[in-house]
Length: 133
Length: 391
Ligand SMILES: [Zn+2]
Image (cartoon, rainbow over all chains, first blue to last red; front, side, top):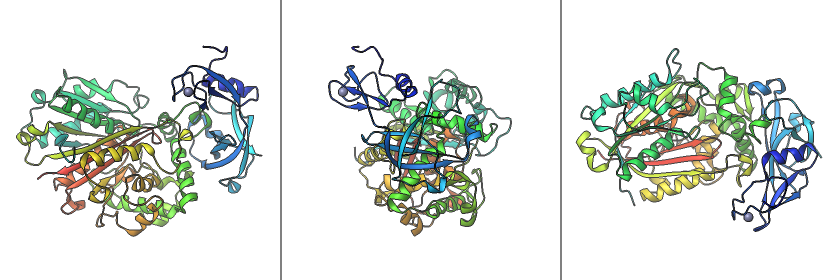
């Protein structure tokens, strides 16, 4: 492996906690992986470079969770969605700072690196979320 | 292949679906096995059955893994190779597929496949947590996305793209509850009306309580034989003539489409080609209505209607019991119940009854060709099988 930081989900969240949305770019075939992977599923290369991507995007779909697992019950009802980022890559997450009745497919959202702290205790990752751009 | 039998079903068993207080999963499974054995008097289970594959999704429910051996033991089959298959809610669809591999390999002429889940002793919050394990952890569960939530994300996208409505989804619940009212083994033998479904409490908007399948205890099994041997055991074998299974990304967010399941489309294409049949040839189907919306999506993925027209199809009444293509005559996961590991082969059990004329009040007249569609997780697994009655 050519780089010092491993291309893993854990490393992805470590960058997140420093306010950076980072994807892994395959040095051989150019495929961008979000989340990063240690081995390219397209060409099996293990050579990658980090590429920072924009946290701005559009809401592709959403739901409002009323019945939550034990760890999230205190937050319910809460909104989660899948956001298509400007790069075309997709990322799911909670949506904060939007009244539920104003949620709309296509609305512009941006990633918030440190907004949602409650919930699962494992692993000790900072949970990003999305809010209006 | 064009319709050549892969394997023959010579018997099938199903426990009553519902709340079974005080019964362990292995005990529940023994009831399904007993029915299958009793139904086929020429079968000597200890002599004839050479392998077992059993679907079981979660060791969390009973703090019990390793279900293969436990189920073999409680079915009086100790000694045979017994393996648990796990593919979330498609665990026993995968068991069925594994049984077909075993028979076709020539290593076993007769195998028992099935599934079991014991769920009702857990709280709804616990079940919500356990079921979510079938989805992606670091990007879905970690962000509070539940299992109903994943299908709700697809439902919202489908409503937006094709003007599908919550009423369309509610009609699936009304239909399947009606069918379950005719099935003595269903968890809920009770009709519901459209108003009650629409007024039920939200679970994951736009999905409401009556859009969700039931948390149920249950077990199912099927006995498969090499086609050349089937007539030795029964006059009414059902032939499996198509089998497809496919995988997709565990995370919904990584997929190209949010309004269809590529895994189901791929599995269906494989099964149809093997059977030499088209969607129009199917006369009765059991589809994976873990949520009402998923039955609608299955109509499109299986080619029962054009993309985006599933709302129209449910409204037409064609998938009702007396319609052109009855779907979920058993009551489906929605009302018969969804003991996750048992569901795939419970669907096969219903098709077996239909194609052998044993479905009683919900019998589809002269049904000869059937299909099952079993989905695991949010669609990371799908298994589709096609059946022909030969009697
Ligand atoms: Zn590559």
